[in-house]
Length: 167
Length: 101
Image 1 (cartoon, rainbow over the protein chains, first blue to last red):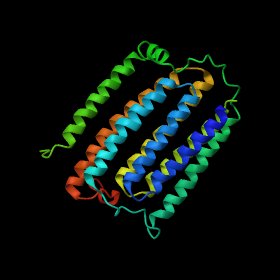
Image 2: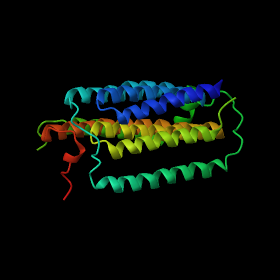
Image 3: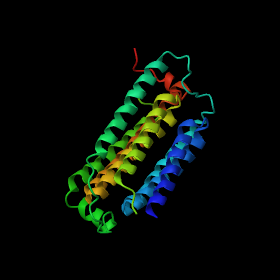
Image 4: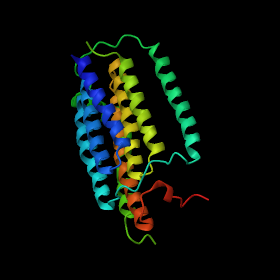
């Protein structure tokens, strides 16, 4: 059951991720990205990360995608932004680097696969809000506070950046 | 029957590679940003898969911080895109060469 659900969610995520990078229209790309994020929330559920699955939907599919759609609508870019043209001399370098990169990642994953043991037995409450909260506010209290500082800085930065007169 | 950890790792690797392809191939800055989000999410899947494998919550806390960072990054990045669009009337990545020489 879990396995078939995994394949359904994974196929949905991969197909819609491909749609993100292959669509000409940025709005369609944004909608495809929402589908990817929802499928990933499903995969988080299968991995007992209940809290993060909900946060994924609220933060990513909610807040971040609204921001993306807002900027797309605001700039109204049309369809002139094309793929890199095949005659561009840089395409050779990009192809070589991509092949090297894909080979590197796949070697890494298949190398890791040899060392994977049995999964630890599940207690069923790994990623509940209670467990996440307890860990976040005890062991990771300082990083949590620093993250709030980061959000404040990015807020000020975003407001400053969009002001009309920077001087 | 739960799928083994390898399946999640392969899935995350595939998602990450799609994100890299988007960054390299697309000329639209907003799509490039979306591809970066794809890569961040692929890494999140890996973190959570290992967290389940070890039955250890720390990986999930890390994903929480990655999500915070992604939110901050998108806010600042989209502000930069809006500012660039105001100056250059374009969101093509080739036109963003202010710091090139």
